Image (cartoon, rainbow, N blue to C red; front, side, top):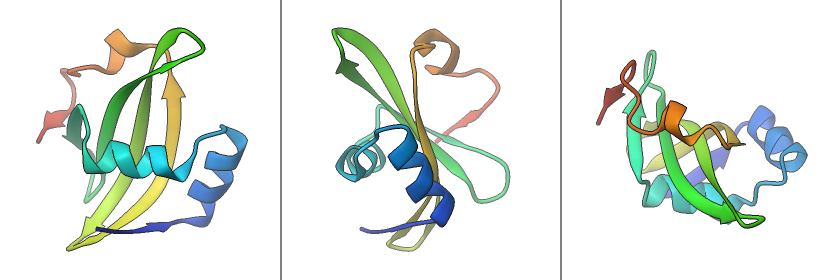
Length: 90
């Protein structure tokens, strides 16, 4: 898979101290993937940071073998997002 990052995504990754390799790992082998509005998808994966569990959520579009990363963020609200009831799981 090839990855392309929007300008917004690049700025967000820098501000949130998220490395591209973690984004690509999350999309390539997620713990969960959900459909969102339109063509958007959310991939999420648990990581250990600072001796705590955090969920990395990556919002993206996929066009054949191209992943277009829109944004990504860390959250400690794991129970809120893990197996969400309000999103369609793929």
